Length: 381
Image 1 (cartoon, rainbow, N blue to C red):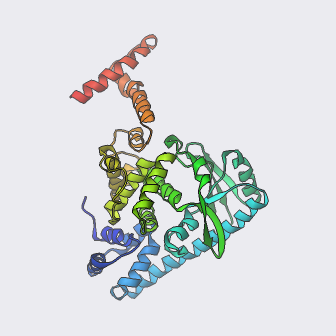
Image 2: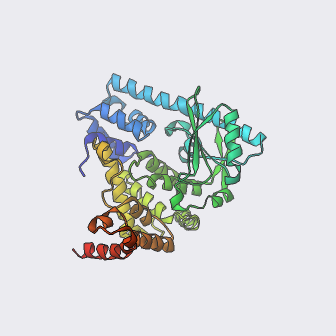
């Protein structure tokens, strides 16, 4: 799909590091007539304002008008200030959880910015994500309510509740698992391997670098209808110094946790859009797997639909898959679960089967026999 010069510029600036030909291409694009309203809108939606500002300042400041420089600086300043507010609030909450002896691990957001970039200002953070153990979720909610937050929603499939501090306008996603529930990711394994990151001069416990990569991969691929560039930027930044041994460990860990296919899809997606070098080791079969590459096609096309202003009418529509279940099956590690879910889909009647022939209620069981034959006939046509 052809991209506008504005989107091409954003894809180049989504890279953690810009060198050589990419710098030349950025400077060439800036010499064209660009619509900066589009650039700023998508840079904010994709959460790459910090990287855009950094690369423009380093490589092309002399090609930007004073007005554009000023607006870009303002957006970056607002992003950085918001990150500082979130970081200070996170440290306050960690102290509260510690005092109540509730185990909590912050992830994504500000701690992810420090792990990936070593700089709080290079990632646009939206909210605070905390993981607690399932048995402590209720107590954690009550503690946050006592700290000024109110529960807005509980999402069973997303394995989290969302809380909001109305006066500070801070959102917290309080997880008891890694969403979505249908992916069957084992969160208990994440508690085994944590590391420290320095946030505002204080050590904070978060997932290991390897597990942080896996969570990034899950977030980059779990919602086909709204992919975002900032996940890919983080993946590229976090793995920029990866050795073959690091990649082997990451794929082994992903297989144990149950997200190896999602890691492969996220790496392929990052490679396609921001030219991250593919690892020279790993599950070659999966990198060449047709269904995983089709899932990456889905993510890529949905990202480009949004950037081309076509997203309103295609929010949940799939382009390369018959339905959402089909998409998620392609990213599910367990062959047994894939076979079971496929079999369930193949024999469970739906409205399309009932539309083929109208049966009275006492013969409705025959739809279970009609559906497999209908699917076979449809495939042969």
